[in-house]
Amino acid sequence: MDSFNPRHHKEKVVIVMGATGTGKSRLAIDLARQFGGEVVNSDKIQVYEGLDIVTNKVTEEECRGVPHHLLGFVDPNVNYTSSDFKLHASLTMDSIISRDRLPIIAGGSNSFIEALVDHEMKFNRRFQFCFLWVDVMLPVLWSFVRVRVDRMVEMGLVDEVREFFNPLGDYSTGLRRAIGVPEMDHFLRADIELVNKEVLVIYLEQAINKIKSNTFKLACKQVQKIDRLRRLWRGKNYIHKLDATQVFLKREKEANKAWDELVLGPSTSIVAQFLHGGDRTSTFFPSSSTFPTIVKNSQTIAFTS
Image (tube, rainbow, N blue to C red; front, side):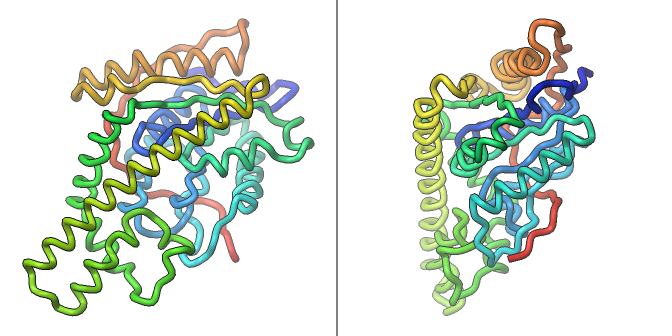
């Protein structure tokens, strides 16, 4: 395995971007295993403790031994801001680099990434970023989103939200903003009021359809934001686009083969060039995980309001 060489004028950081469901976590973990890295979560909802199914946090098994940071560590009732993320991400990156490891930031909250990268000049003098964008054609991603939400329901999404439900809760703050929580409100209120089962079935179906629709709307907004950042950062930060569409159109072994050929292989070459220039090459290790990934739980740094 190729290890990270920290002896550079600027410290190197890899950032994996993309819409929800495109495989950012998988790529971040694959690259961390290739280059001796640790993953820093940049998803503004996954920072909160709880609702692991709803928020699709990566599981211990899916981490495959790769340390994850800023994941599930914030009180669900606290508003976690871009400023909070900048502080915690900076401290975490310093900690990772102090261990001669490579920080790999991954998540769908592009506002967090923008806040971090467009930090004060002192910060930008210290770090150099390599941006990877995992992209999937939106019609294909829409099909995947529908399947993924159905799978999350099978995993226990309804009961998870029911346990978290508060009729007086504010859906504009903290973890209650997560897609999957406000959409269930009408169904859960009817459930408390003992509405008949036939009506409850209809309400639940409506809630699930809203979750699918709102998840896809989020994905569209995320793609638009990345496109905006590409234009904004032109000449300053180049974003490498990796088309994973074919991965989603194939199944099992063929999907994994497509992932290695179209996403992981090119990403490995890009990161090796970023870290070592033309002086060294990186051995490419095929991904040992399967696609698609349905994700859940993990940890680090304490946060108080």
